[in-house]
Figure (cartoon, rainbow, N blue to C red):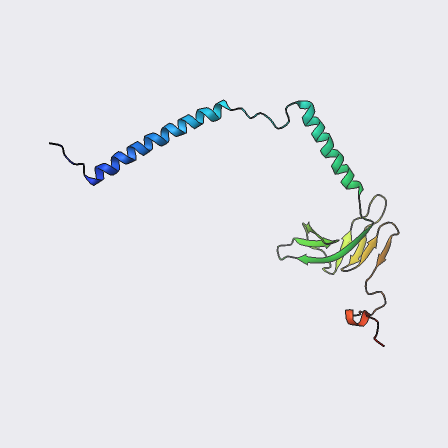
Length: 150
């Protein structure tokens, strides 16, 4: 007479078979992956040097393209002492808190002194001029800038 397996024994047998199948699958795929050699993206040393040379050329070209004007869009000082300044709409992190939160000091280039700008001012590097959006002392709303209707 055959004895019927108990429910727990059925689960145990299923778990053993599942574990054995998974183990065989892992071993088989591990051997295939070990045999497959993908190599490098650029095979020779010369190709890698060419890529590095091109990358450096792009960096130098980007460094040469410098905007002739710098606009200070804003500045935020955190309680931690760090601050963020927006120049031409791009945020720049600063490690230290500025002395005057309403002003930004831009470092000068070769042989030129640093420039202290208020928020909203624009420095023309070529002419060395600072333009203020409130030069006339009046601020006009968009409706005031429009021409009056006849």
